[in-house]
Image 1 (cartoon, rainbow, N blue to C red):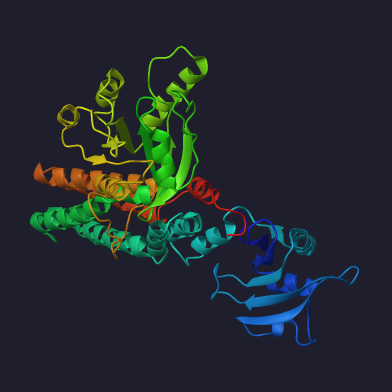
Image 2: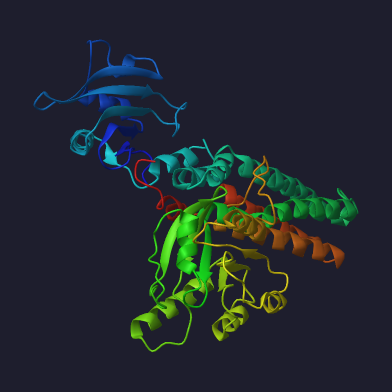
Length: 462
């Protein structure tokens, strides 16, 4: 990436809208904008106007003096901008053709098209935000629920980055003392005692462990919870999907094998984005189409965070039910006794014994009975009760979690080196490793490949 270039991009979504915004950033941003902007009424050049002001005028093709649009231009001088560079934002009418023509003018007069995420990448490289905040920008855009939005906003505010910086600074200070001990070892001078080192490492390890304990919950908030609805044919899986979605999304009939493919739909359950996966009824079949549906149902079962095992309480327990009970034993699961508005014939005691410590809920999907209890059970199973979105930082990224886990392993090896009275050089080595891994999270330790991988996921214009 060439940070000396002046970049531009359309920052609003594709399609027609009331307003479309073109963003320009870089050393030549104001000069390039001046070439295509005519202030109304005529007045000083943009270069002579104060920062953080808005001006009315026209976008004009200087080669023909053709007026493209009436616009509002926001003039923002660095470093008090998103990228810490000079920036101009032009608010046009939101016609895609108009925006493309305005962009063409800017590109013709010295700007280049921004790469995906390049504005935010410049904000990171110029020290305005750390890497956790940069990644939170995309999470804010992609959040599906209020809960995930709140967690992403907390990260954008720097909660996680600040926590990591504190831990990293403590390790840096500790490393300085450990290396001082090494330097003065021949003089029998102990700058810091082994007991004090152990106390500091234990405190840091405990703090990191608290972050890691919320990692799975954070990832679910960010990426969504995958819930597979499984059961033998005709127990009401599709009816349950429709009831949770509050719409007739899946076809429901009395004919076994109606669902022959995996049907996936997103729903907001208690502030969590949940992907409900309605699967084909799992049973022995020779129908090639239904057989493919069964294969896909097994794949959905393997990748699900949570399984809803649906059984028909109005019928005796069948061999297919017993097979599925054994199949899902090792999964996070909830037993769903459907059709509870009818006379019960199922051997509920057998199910509860086979699925010990598994929450069971009685519902009637067609009558929409017991759905709140099912939602409670899902929340309890995934978040172990009420989800707390307080001020504590959440780990919501697999990249963050993996790096912090490596830091924790290095700290544990450092503690082990202390316990076994290994040479201080081993302690220093593991402390440096922990510092580097924490640095990967906030971007103090990084590579161009990592940055390219992160920012390539962004949309152009952000």
